[in-house]
Length: 285
Image 1 (tube, rainbow, N blue to C red):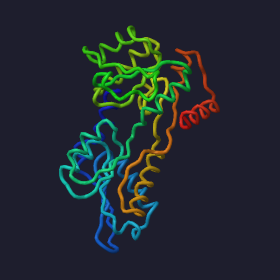
Image 2 (tube, rainbow, N blue to C red):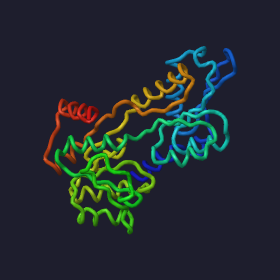
Image 3 (spheres, rainbow, N blue to C red):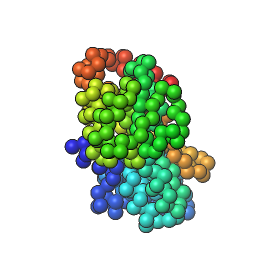
Image 4 (tube, rainbow, N blue to C red):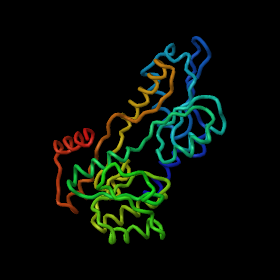
């Protein structure tokens, strides 16, 4: 089930969905158009409703912009248009550099996955004094220095993530595993298999999207749909006020806990008040 979920998230569109676009045309003043491409219909409808709710036709009359949903939506749109600026939403950061390099027009992105620093702060808040680890696609010695000295970088096992993670758990001296969405490290099924292996070895996993929380991760630092929508609003407001297209993540993350995993494996229960305090600590770090 997780494999299907991750594949759906990474592709973020069916073939039909890639070809569909919701166009909002504003005839006032110079001809301009905001069009929405790719992804699920519910996502496109949500963005369309967002535009209609927050701005009038006159306000958007001079804006020429394409909004793409998901990685596949961005790739498909750039194949058919090389001039219209693009605001890319609901895609993961690890795919962006590769995809945007294929686009000739300016592309700004609002990523759907939380940055590594929030995963690390969540690990510190939940398991104070623990040492965190994560996989990197290259040689750890050649990677940028971790933002925290207690973050251990591990090479992807030669035998693959699914087979090699158990060995790394036995060999390494670390306590918490950070599992960001990273297409250079993980294939779709690797997320489920990694979480299963970590669960068996009683190693807590911190993830960057909420959909992995129910698969065995102990916690997720993630963005809600409302937080992502707020980021879209800020981006379009900036375009209207300054004539510059920018994409910025939401200002904060939400923190979710798998209460069953936390209780059964680590003997801890968080009240709603404690969870709010933990979330504030993660965002204030």
